[in-house]
Image (cartoon, rainbow, N blue to C red):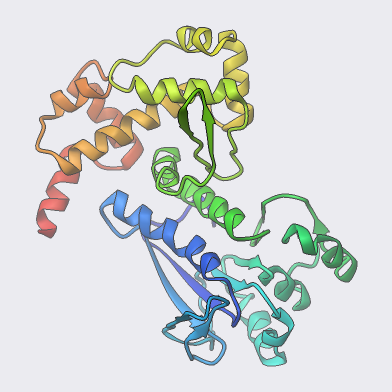
Length: 323
């Protein structure tokens, strides 16, 4: 299931009327960005509506769909998106279709009030779940058979639920991380930085991967140093000293806040910078290695292959073949 996806993963996306435009984008745009950064189709998706007609969003902008939702025995993950008036869209026919398709799906996700639709169809019985914070108490009262958790998103086996648009973005970054690694998820997140904090006149970037939220100023300082020293990586002890804490404390903070060790985040930054150079320039691999803190082209190539499942040469050959 999650974390064991093939190189190309397909999602079915069912969009109900009165869904927020940003909610739809929060699902699709990270997948599109992952494809663009990877230089190949890691993800595909098909949009459905209950009746096959374009979905009227709350912004008044209709979203075209491929077809009406008439599931058979598809096994691809299914995302059910809903924002307002979910009861109006959760017809008896739709709930029957969801119940039937759930027997075959590798997972079903209730996005925002899509969680209500799954619960009303008994598809969350016995699972842990979440929903938008404004609806949390109402949900808990209406569906006591669901174990409600106050989180931005919850992944519990074959069920996923989210609490809104930005938590859904967090979720998609987490799914990308599980399927394709921290480096790609980090690079995608840097395209969707939506929390910023001003300190001493600097605009600090605050990326988000999964449930990661950099709120500790010492971790922020260490991340900023890493971004500024991609070419000449600093030892952990020096990073920690400049952040005002011990190396062990920084290690613990990173694991708590980011979910990874400092060296893993540092390496991801360097590899992402290297990958951009592989794709966007004609620089030699030796020059790219030197520019991103690797002591040799062979060491760079080994690390690149381990993270991206292809060598730098493979990347360039594949992209050249597409032109």
